[in-house]
Amino acid sequence: MATITKKELIDRIAETTQAKRVVVKRIVQSFLDEIISELAKDNRLEFRDFGVFECRTRASRTAQNPKTLQRVSVPTKRTVKFKMGRVLKQKLVSGT
Image 1 (tube, rainbow, N blue to C red):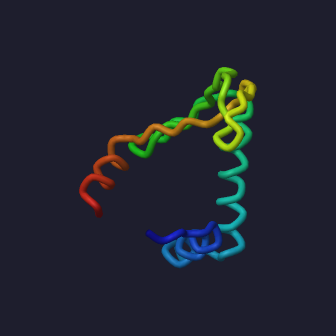
Image 2: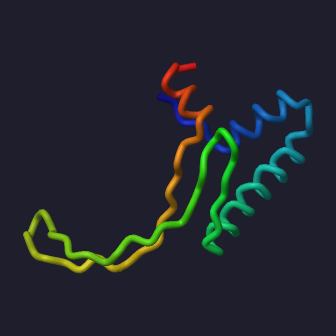
């Protein structure tokens, strides 16, 4: 399994679209900034066939330190949940 960086993704998009790398970089960064901004406002982001991003709040809980076996309190925290869309799910299942 390979890791694709933002830079590599930008290079691929620039090559595929024949757009300047600087323009693609600005668009990709703007897109990511908008996703962050909307999630920070607790908005749900839905990209048809790709998936849905939404904020979830994890309740506070008591956990245990595995080394000391001491009980520790884990505070409430916000996280992002991603649910795969139909096309993404099909691509992962078929492996293409």
